[in-house]
Image (cartoon, rainbow, N blue to C red; front, side, top):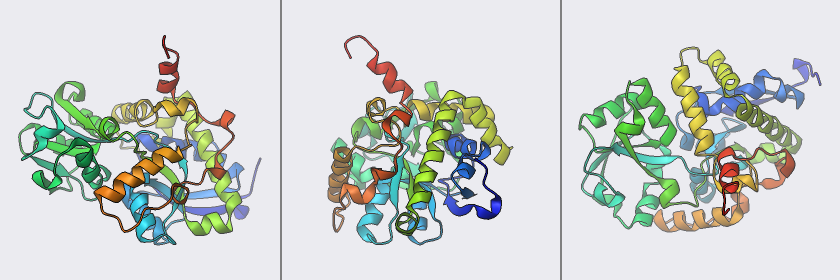
Length: 336
């Protein structure tokens, strides 16, 4: 279907960070005309963390974006009328981690007590540190945290040199940035991953403002359909997806970003529910568990309902949703 540019419905879209591998589905959908097929034109803006995309949507600076589901709990509590709502849960497993030197003395979460960690400002993993600590039975105040604007590739190297004991971030982001720094992450780093300790958490999701959902539900449905097609194409051809990223950011390290994208598909998008619900869906029971934990850990004033966080009505039919490759493999194993 062809739609003239004059007739396209333009959306302001905030990304989680600079153009990179784990956003490839958006750009592949754009390049292949899937947004245009839905009567949409998307103006992408680079963001400055997954968590920060949520308040920018709440402030009305953008119409849609790629934000953190857990930050959404806080904003739906503080500003229930303005906070965005998730319509497509991209990460059905949390990507948050604390990376530590593999050969160092920190062997378990309790070994973090008395240590010094480093984080980016507003890093989503750092923001969810109270929940991690509550799940692991440790006191957040017993761990010192320093904030740095240095890129992860520098932070990893400095951590391994002994400047800090650990680093907050996303598993695949830290691993990819280690590769860019000439460091082999599998042998140099140990990860304490939220998915193991706080398994109810989701991660990134496609979000829209309440205004867009209320006034233009057809555009929201079209946005979700187009993104879903982009996810399917990314799973089918990772290299084509990286080509789409490189068109927007020619300076990217293709090897590191391909590894980061492949890692995202195999980790953040590989919860076993993906084989049954499909990528994009969110389990209300898991959302309720997360809300309860965050309400307690952060002493939130109220606990928003799961349906305030996620609207499943825009999802494509189950048969059209992408299935988690890792989850499919797990379900095919003997005894499953």
